[in-house]
Length: 464
Image (tube, rainbow, N blue to C red; front, side, top):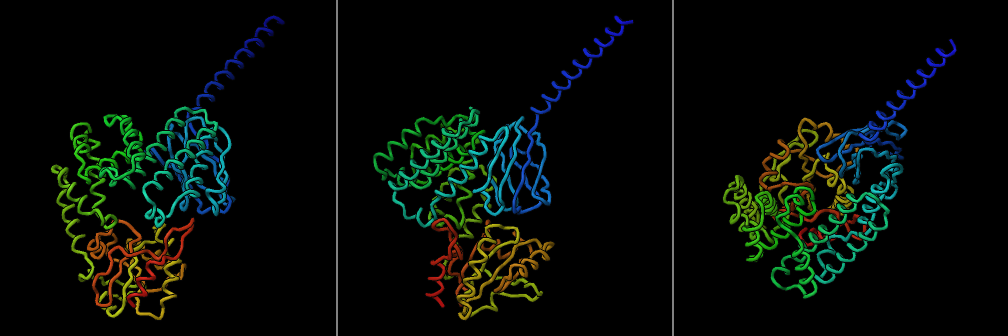
């Protein structure tokens, strides 16, 4: 009996150990197959956060106390963390266990990660904060000479590489991808700012030699890099567009003989996007280059119509008109505002950059309240969301003339003015003629913050 009992005990122990081992193996495999995200948000901007990237999207509920907890089954790569107001880059891989803490009111300044996978993500948080602190405003950017901008970009790149090298990240794939990202971002910025002079042979020797050296290192036939690296794709398109629109024969030869069809398609797409009000200085060059390269492009007729339309919207020409209802249902037309400058703000309730302009638009309205200026805010919200539009008018105490278009993006005034992005501001003179189809915004980003735009005030003062 005793030996049988001992034998049964031995079998029980052996079975238990085997089962425990099996469960541990299964549990270990399970742990390594997904990402666990948890955290706490002080002053949350929403009751949800969204993780997206690489074709994946996951919406996670945020509890009333600001906490959240969920699992993600994903492949390793770059993702975006978004809380409906702010966003940041994340690097996720199966097996990561990340706990996140942040204050919604000071998103970038307070974002911290702890747990498995913390180092790549704390680096990303530092990178975003670095960009915020070292960004230059558009006015400064325009004024910078070639050498000054060249020095700025090289210094910025060196600082980012130092930040990366001091991050103590052990993931070699992440480190390699970030180094490539920073390199191609710098080259893209340089060619965007200096490209015209570079291809015309007007840049100083040190700049020309540096650019030549960097570009000689690039294998333009590298289809894997093109498919996997967004920053390389942006640089390639910027480089070839700058060269082709400058009439550089070497670039044309490279385009014809070295590039793959998918690369050519990307360049043609960039040219098409450049045929817009945002690129008036080079509009003709972009269009002429596009026509030369796009013989088989299915959009060629549409792009020609767009180009022709933009060319007709010249200063002094009669402005396209509008006649849309305000929040009370009363129609307001451009003709009814004759005798006043008309400053049109095309916006929507879902547009963050539009809403960022509102406080400064209200300041302009207050400053010029007694002058003959009509401030018209034209919403392109869908009519099914008209109640949301009306609520925002009340909640944000919007003044001026508030009207809503009839067909959102397809409304006639919107298509007549070739509006493809918002906010878009338009200035019309007292006789109903066009002054500026791309008028200055109420606010500009300057010295690290949004400020009331002096340019639009000067225009008002000269024309009231």
